[in-house]
Length: 263
Image (tube, rainbow, N blue to C red; front, side, top):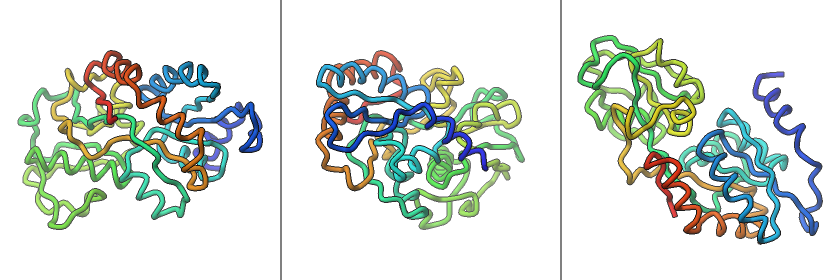
Protein backbone atom coordinates (compact mmCIF):
# COMPACT_ATOMS: atom_id res chain seq x y z
CA UNK A 1 0.00 0.00 0.00
CA UNK A 2 1.50 3.38 -0.99
CA UNK A 3 1.72 6.35 1.36
CA UNK A 4 -1.28 8.06 -0.25
CA UNK A 5 -3.47 5.01 0.32
CA UNK A 6 -2.27 4.76 3.90
CA UNK A 7 -2.95 8.45 4.50
CA UNK A 8 -6.41 8.20 2.97
CA UNK A 9 -7.26 5.18 5.07
CA UNK A 10 -6.15 6.99 8.22
CA UNK A 11 -8.06 10.16 7.40
CA UNK A 12 -11.25 8.34 6.56
CA UNK A 13 -11.32 5.90 9.45
CA UNK A 14 -12.56 8.73 11.62
CA UNK A 15 -15.48 9.51 9.34
CA UNK A 16 -18.99 8.38 10.23
CA UNK A 17 -20.79 6.09 7.83
CA UNK A 18 -22.50 8.27 5.26
CA UNK A 19 -26.28 8.28 5.33
CA UNK A 20 -28.36 8.27 2.14
CA UNK A 21 -28.25 11.58 0.24
CA UNK A 22 -31.81 12.47 1.26
CA UNK A 23 -31.38 11.72 4.96
CA UNK A 24 -32.64 14.53 7.17
CA UNK A 25 -29.73 14.44 9.66
CA UNK A 26 -26.95 14.11 7.11
CA UNK A 27 -23.43 15.21 8.05
CA UNK A 28 -21.48 16.42 5.02
CA UNK A 29 -17.74 15.77 4.89
CA UNK A 30 -15.49 18.50 3.52
CA UNK A 31 -11.83 17.85 2.71
CA UNK A 32 -9.32 20.67 3.19
CA UNK A 33 -5.59 21.21 3.57
CA UNK A 34 -4.16 22.45 6.89
CA UNK A 35 -3.85 26.15 7.59
CA UNK A 36 -5.88 28.71 5.68
CA UNK A 37 -8.53 26.35 4.31
CA UNK A 38 -8.98 24.40 7.52
CA UNK A 39 -9.15 27.50 9.73
CA UNK A 40 -11.65 29.25 7.48
CA UNK A 41 -13.88 26.20 7.19
CA UNK A 42 -13.84 25.86 10.99
CA UNK A 43 -15.13 29.43 11.14
CA UNK A 44 -17.87 28.61 8.62
CA UNK A 45 -18.97 25.43 10.43
CA UNK A 46 -21.05 27.11 13.20
CA UNK A 47 -22.58 29.47 10.62
CA UNK A 48 -23.82 26.41 8.76
CA UNK A 49 -25.02 24.78 11.99
CA UNK A 50 -27.37 27.73 12.50
CA UNK A 51 -28.95 26.74 9.17
CA UNK A 52 -29.26 23.12 10.23
CA UNK A 53 -26.31 21.90 8.14
CA UNK A 54 -23.65 19.83 9.89
CA UNK A 55 -20.21 19.39 8.30
CA UNK A 56 -17.23 17.29 9.29
CA UNK A 57 -13.90 18.79 8.26
CA UNK A 58 -11.20 16.34 7.19
CA UNK A 59 -7.66 17.67 6.77
CA UNK A 60 -5.26 16.21 4.19
CA UNK A 61 -1.54 16.91 4.02
CA UNK A 62 -1.27 16.55 0.23
CA UNK A 63 -3.04 17.62 -2.95
CA UNK A 64 -3.81 14.15 -4.32
CA UNK A 65 -6.18 12.47 -1.89
CA UNK A 66 -8.95 15.09 -1.54
CA UNK A 67 -10.02 14.74 -5.19
CA UNK A 68 -9.72 10.96 -5.08
CA UNK A 69 -11.95 10.90 -2.00
CA UNK A 70 -14.67 13.12 -3.50
CA UNK A 71 -14.71 11.12 -6.71
CA UNK A 72 -15.07 7.85 -4.80
CA UNK A 73 -17.78 9.25 -2.50
CA UNK A 74 -15.69 9.14 0.68
CA UNK A 75 -15.95 12.93 0.86
CA UNK A 76 -18.84 15.16 -0.19
CA UNK A 77 -16.82 18.26 -1.04
CA UNK A 78 -13.30 19.60 -0.95
CA UNK A 79 -11.86 23.12 -0.78
CA UNK A 80 -8.11 23.31 -1.36
CA UNK A 81 -7.29 23.70 -5.07
CA UNK A 82 -7.52 26.12 -7.97
CA UNK A 83 -9.25 25.52 -11.29
CA UNK A 84 -6.12 24.70 -13.35
CA UNK A 85 -5.22 21.97 -10.86
CA UNK A 86 -8.72 20.50 -10.97
CA UNK A 87 -8.76 20.61 -14.77
CA UNK A 88 -5.49 18.69 -14.88
CA UNK A 89 -6.72 16.09 -12.39
CA UNK A 90 -9.96 15.55 -14.33
CA UNK A 91 -8.02 15.18 -17.58
CA UNK A 92 -5.39 12.80 -16.19
CA UNK A 93 -7.53 10.70 -13.85
CA UNK A 94 -10.99 10.84 -15.38
CA UNK A 95 -12.60 12.22 -12.24
CA UNK A 96 -16.22 13.38 -12.52
CA UNK A 97 -15.61 16.48 -10.43
CA UNK A 98 -16.80 20.05 -10.93
CA UNK A 99 -16.24 23.45 -9.38
CA UNK A 100 -19.24 25.02 -7.65
CA UNK A 101 -17.77 28.34 -6.50
CA UNK A 102 -14.66 30.23 -5.42
CA UNK A 103 -13.33 30.93 -1.94
CA UNK A 104 -9.99 32.77 -1.85
CA UNK A 105 -6.71 33.41 -3.63
CA UNK A 106 -3.43 32.45 -2.01
CA UNK A 107 -0.67 34.14 -4.04
CA UNK A 108 2.36 31.88 -4.48
CA UNK A 109 5.60 33.34 -3.17
CA UNK A 110 9.34 32.75 -3.51
CA UNK A 111 11.19 32.28 -0.21
CA UNK A 112 14.76 31.82 0.96
CA UNK A 113 16.80 31.42 4.11
CA UNK A 114 20.02 32.16 2.22
CA UNK A 115 19.46 35.37 0.27
CA UNK A 116 17.54 38.59 0.80
CA UNK A 117 16.84 39.42 -2.84
CA UNK A 118 16.47 37.53 -6.11
CA UNK A 119 19.29 39.71 -7.43
CA UNK A 120 21.63 37.71 -5.17
CA UNK A 121 21.02 34.46 -7.05
CA UNK A 122 24.25 33.01 -8.43
CA UNK A 123 24.96 30.69 -11.34
CA UNK A 124 23.95 27.12 -10.55
CA UNK A 125 21.83 27.92 -7.51
CA UNK A 126 19.14 25.36 -6.67
CA UNK A 127 15.48 26.31 -7.01
CA UNK A 128 12.68 24.17 -5.53
CA UNK A 129 9.23 24.19 -7.13
CA UNK A 130 6.08 22.07 -6.70
CA UNK A 131 6.14 18.76 -8.56
CA UNK A 132 2.52 18.81 -9.74
CA UNK A 133 2.02 20.23 -13.26
CA UNK A 134 -0.18 23.19 -12.46
CA UNK A 135 1.60 24.50 -9.38
CA UNK A 136 4.98 23.79 -10.95
CA UNK A 137 3.90 25.77 -14.00
CA UNK A 138 2.61 28.50 -11.72
CA UNK A 139 6.04 28.74 -10.06
CA UNK A 140 7.83 28.89 -13.40
CA UNK A 141 5.53 31.65 -14.64
CA UNK A 142 6.31 33.65 -11.50
CA UNK A 143 10.06 33.19 -12.02
CA UNK A 144 9.69 34.16 -15.67
CA UNK A 145 7.85 37.33 -14.67
CA UNK A 146 10.82 38.20 -12.46
CA UNK A 147 13.21 37.74 -15.41
CA UNK A 148 15.01 34.68 -14.04
CA UNK A 149 13.98 32.28 -16.82
CA UNK A 150 12.20 32.31 -20.15
CA UNK A 151 9.64 29.68 -21.09
CA UNK A 152 9.24 28.36 -24.59
CA UNK A 153 6.62 30.12 -26.75
CA UNK A 154 3.21 28.60 -26.17
CA UNK A 155 4.05 27.18 -22.76
CA UNK A 156 0.76 26.96 -20.87
CA UNK A 157 -0.24 27.06 -17.21
CA UNK A 158 1.07 23.51 -16.91
CA UNK A 159 4.55 24.40 -18.17
CA UNK A 160 7.33 22.20 -16.80
CA UNK A 161 11.08 22.41 -16.41
CA UNK A 162 11.43 20.97 -19.92
CA UNK A 163 9.69 24.10 -21.23
CA UNK A 164 12.44 26.41 -19.97
CA UNK A 165 13.97 27.95 -23.10
CA UNK A 166 16.18 30.52 -21.38
CA UNK A 167 18.06 30.09 -18.10
CA UNK A 168 20.92 32.63 -18.03
CA UNK A 169 21.99 31.77 -14.49
CA UNK A 170 21.78 28.03 -15.19
CA UNK A 171 19.57 27.59 -12.16
CA UNK A 172 19.07 23.97 -11.12
CA UNK A 173 15.46 23.01 -10.51
CA UNK A 174 14.31 20.57 -7.85
CA UNK A 175 10.69 19.37 -8.05
CA UNK A 176 9.15 18.38 -4.71
CA UNK A 177 5.74 17.67 -3.22
CA UNK A 178 4.20 21.05 -2.42
CA UNK A 179 3.86 20.25 1.28
CA UNK A 180 7.60 19.53 1.54
CA UNK A 181 8.79 22.82 0.03
CA UNK A 182 9.16 24.78 3.30
CA UNK A 183 11.37 21.99 4.64
CA UNK A 184 13.56 22.22 1.54
CA UNK A 185 14.70 25.78 2.27
CA UNK A 186 17.93 24.74 4.07
CA UNK A 187 18.92 22.69 1.01
CA UNK A 188 18.08 25.10 -1.82
CA UNK A 189 18.65 28.79 -2.48
CA UNK A 190 15.02 29.64 -3.16
CA UNK A 191 11.70 27.78 -3.16
CA UNK A 192 8.34 28.70 -4.69
CA UNK A 193 5.79 27.83 -2.00
CA UNK A 194 2.00 27.86 -1.95
CA UNK A 195 0.72 30.26 0.70
CA UNK A 196 -1.12 27.65 2.76
CA UNK A 197 2.11 25.72 3.30
CA UNK A 198 4.14 28.92 3.76
CA UNK A 199 1.88 30.08 6.59
CA UNK A 200 2.06 26.65 8.23
CA UNK A 201 5.85 27.08 8.28
CA UNK A 202 5.54 30.58 9.84
CA UNK A 203 6.47 32.27 6.58
CA UNK A 204 4.42 35.43 6.09
CA UNK A 205 4.06 36.31 2.39
CA UNK A 206 3.78 40.05 2.97
CA UNK A 207 6.93 39.97 5.10
CA UNK A 208 9.11 37.11 3.92
CA UNK A 209 8.49 36.54 0.21
CA UNK A 210 11.21 37.68 -2.18
CA UNK A 211 8.60 37.67 -4.96
CA UNK A 212 4.88 37.05 -4.95
CA UNK A 213 2.09 36.70 -7.47
CA UNK A 214 -0.02 39.75 -8.22
CA UNK A 215 -3.40 40.08 -6.56
CA UNK A 216 -5.11 39.36 -9.89
CA UNK A 217 -3.71 35.83 -9.95
CA UNK A 218 -5.92 33.44 -11.97
CA UNK A 219 -5.46 30.77 -9.31
CA UNK A 220 -8.51 31.37 -7.12
CA UNK A 221 -9.28 28.35 -4.95
CA UNK A 222 -12.58 26.58 -5.48
CA UNK A 223 -15.18 24.31 -3.90
CA UNK A 224 -15.33 20.94 -5.67
CA UNK A 225 -18.01 18.23 -5.63
CA UNK A 226 -18.90 15.20 -7.67
CA UNK A 227 -20.81 16.20 -10.81
CA UNK A 228 -23.93 14.41 -9.57
CA UNK A 229 -24.13 16.83 -6.62
CA UNK A 230 -23.46 20.12 -8.40
CA UNK A 231 -27.05 21.36 -8.05
CA UNK A 232 -27.75 19.91 -4.60
CA UNK A 233 -29.30 22.24 -2.04
CA UNK A 234 -26.61 21.44 0.55
CA UNK A 235 -23.89 22.43 -1.91
CA UNK A 236 -25.52 25.78 -2.58
CA UNK A 237 -26.00 26.31 1.16
CA UNK A 238 -22.33 25.68 1.99
CA UNK A 239 -21.03 27.90 -0.79
CA UNK A 240 -23.49 30.75 -0.16
CA UNK A 241 -22.78 30.69 3.59
CA UNK A 242 -19.05 30.79 2.94
CA UNK A 243 -19.36 33.67 0.48
CA UNK A 244 -20.65 36.19 3.02
CA UNK A 245 -19.31 39.32 4.70
CA UNK A 246 -18.47 37.66 8.07
CA UNK A 247 -16.29 35.07 6.33
CA UNK A 248 -14.65 37.72 4.16
CA UNK A 249 -13.84 39.75 7.27
CA UNK A 250 -12.46 36.66 9.01
CA UNK A 251 -10.12 35.93 6.09
CA UNK A 252 -8.84 39.49 5.86
CA UNK A 253 -8.33 39.86 9.61
CA UNK A 254 -6.88 36.41 10.29
CA UNK A 255 -4.41 36.16 7.42
CA UNK A 256 -3.44 39.84 7.32
CA UNK A 257 -3.38 40.27 3.56
CA UNK A 258 -1.69 36.96 2.77
CA UNK A 259 -5.03 35.60 1.50
CA UNK A 260 -7.52 37.52 -0.63
CA UNK A 261 -11.24 36.60 -0.72
CA UNK A 262 -12.37 35.64 -4.24
CA UNK A 263 -16.06 36.40 -3.69
